[in-house]
Figure (tube, rainbow, N blue to C red):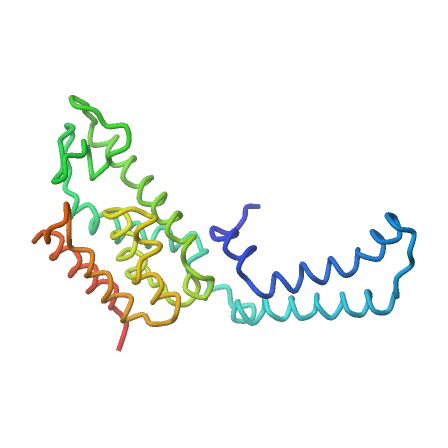
Amino acid sequence: MKLIQNWRNVALKSWSMWFIYAGLLLLILPEVRFAVWGVEANPYLSGYGGLALLVLGGLGRLLDQGGLDRSRLRSSAAVTVAAFLAIAVPFVGGWEGRSNHAYQDIVGVWTICDGHTKGVNPGDYMTDAQCDALFEAELIEYRDGLHAYFSERTLRHRLTPERDVAYVSLAYNAGIRGAGRSTATRRLNAGDIAGGCKALTWWNKAGGRVVRGLVRRRAAEYGLCMQGLA
């Protein structure tokens, strides 16, 4: 047994979970009150009130999840990770390029393999097998980090594998925090999918100037993001 991938988001931001928390609190509050102050509480108020909140919370979970149709929870399913990687590895890798030897990128950061920068030093070398494993692990790491900025409804209903890759490609290139707090993400969370895709194209600068390669990359991400929209 393991937690769903976006469990923090669900636990902290889902209104149905907060109904459940309030219901449990209302049920145990009389016991705490009696233990601490020796004061009896109205059992009907706490009992019926707590039960009502738990029922509302349970109903909210069913509504949010589209009943019991688990096939709609695409972002939480293992197959989605596989579908994500099937698109992300060639797409992001195609833009990053690969170098088995450490090199300095366009803004002078030491880089190796498919855009890896953490702890890279001049003279470092990695084999293709090491680069492959590192790249997949990093893509999943960036995806997990970026998903923390998405609403529950976005994760479940607005992210196709292609759109997921488009946003993670931006995060991989510009950083999780930047992509997570971007207009692109805010628009997507607000339900403006096309507007969010368009905002991806704004990230076309490096070192304060527009870079032709980034313009092309953002255009490709936009095309990927818009797939499936009328």
